[in-house]
Length: 174
Image (cartoon, rainbow, N blue to C red):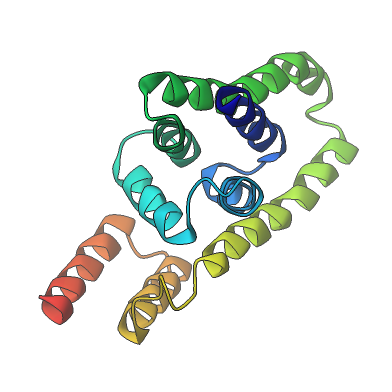
């Protein structure tokens, strides 16, 4: 029964998770932590951190890890990963021919323009969701983040930002 619940949960996440992995984090949190209660917010935060460090899309890495945690075996990992990948693949196959025909259409461009701010909002919601007493590091980390955000707006090289943030973290936290 757990395999069916896991498959259906990640199938739902896959179908409604528009905007990439970071936009899907709030959906994952709601489904896996709130609705199913399989893991805690702190565990999800750790899973997301590990998923960011490993190669591949964050949502798929997260699904693989949660699938293993919930079932205790590789079959749960494979099932959750498949359920996460199946909806986008199906949708892309179905709409790719349609999109080629309408990609220059002003209404289609308007829809895409309308969806972009929604994705930013979902990513922001995912970031704010993890800002609580359990997971909040400290104000110095917030200052480093804000500095990187400003540097992004100023078009600073991302590799330079990563290096500067890493050095700042090493100097401040040892």
